[in-house]
Amino acid sequence: MKLWDKGFSTDQKIDHFTVGNDRELDLLLAKYDVIASKAHAKMLGSIGILTETEAQTLCEALDRIGLQIEKGAFTIEDSFEDMHSKIEYLLTEDLGDLGKKIHTARSRNDQVLVAMQLYLKEELTQIKKSTQELFDLLLQLAETHKQVLLPGYTHLQIAMPSSFGLWFSAYAESLIDDLYFVDAAYKIADQNPLGSAAGYGSSFPIDREKTTRDMGFANLKYNVVAAQMGRGKVEKATAMGLGALGHTLSKMAMDVCLYMSQNFDFIGFPNELTTGSSIMPHKKNPDVFELIRAKCNRIQAVPMELTLITNNLPSGYHRDLQLVKEALIPAISDLKACLELMHFSLAQIQVNPNILDDPKYDYLFSVDTLNELVQQGMPFRDAYKKMGQDIEAGNYSPKRDIEHTHLGSLGNLSLDGIQKKMEEL
Image (cartoon, rainbow, N blue to C red; front, side, top):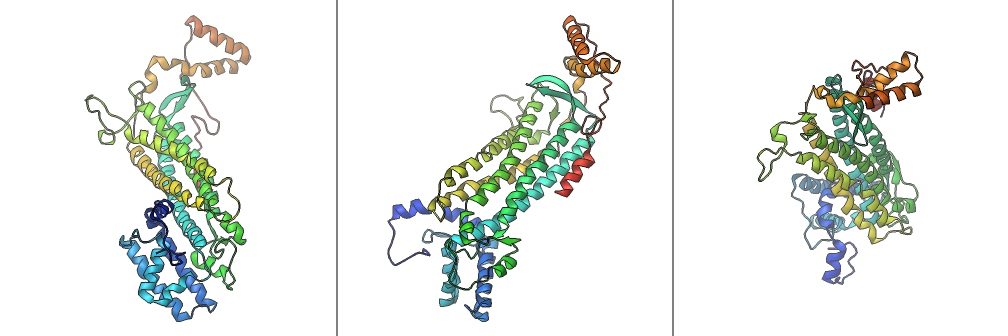
């Protein structure tokens, strides 16, 4: 069944190519098409296109379909093009001609838009919740391990003292920046496009404010052409939010992979969180973090993929837009899994408390030793030269009793300030 069926068939090759994997992806979106269809039916009843009884009957039938979806019993067979055609078929099978009335005053275009935006709102809310949970864990770890020093690097060369307090809370605060992008995507998605139909509105006197309220949108996309142009744009905004989080997670995963290596030996994990080698019995590999790194790097490519699909399309609907969900929906699934596994693994991290006992890290303290000379009255440039000469001559003695007191430093992590930023967000 196709919603645009005019009584003739499409060549099977054309059908297979144009449908693609819509049926599979639509199984995730069908719940939201039911929600939107109920709001649409209620609205049609309120303006007299349907009787109140007809609207109620349609809503009850849609509830039954929603229950099938919830139980995992909803399927989209090859004879159906997508979730919309299958849901309308089930309504017609159940209610006869009344089921055929559900498509009055709407198009598959605004059906896709509203289902996708309802889906994105829910997924972005869950992603924000999972990010908050990871943030809370990172701040907790920062507080727990704030006294444990570790080397800071620039150019992958030993640079200055850092700490696990700085390391954990740096990633916590970075997550706040990422959520600014997520919130922006949510705000774009939180505009009701239903009623834009094929992109040019409807001659029926529909009540778009009612459907906006009933579906819980904060606002509506007023201009019907703008609503249609939002297709692809809201997905790209979401992808940018995912990509921001992916950037932070992949960077932290890379740090973990380095710090776990025997050459660093900064951190460890229980054996059950690592994997082995088929021939090297001593191996304990950070596979989960390598996959987080790879998956999150792939997620960061999604905004560009969506840009290339949509950037030269004129206004109005084009079938190219079907492909945006093929890129976005798997990325959402991957990011949620990465957030979950990062939280699960870091909750069991083992920190080495004696990293800087190794004399190879003595040079970490050269800047603090230099600064002590400056505080004693020596001009900075002279102190810098003296320190360089002492190091070269082997006369350098590190000042290990460092004192960093400014906001955001080793001795003043400002965890409460970081926490407040998240609460305000």
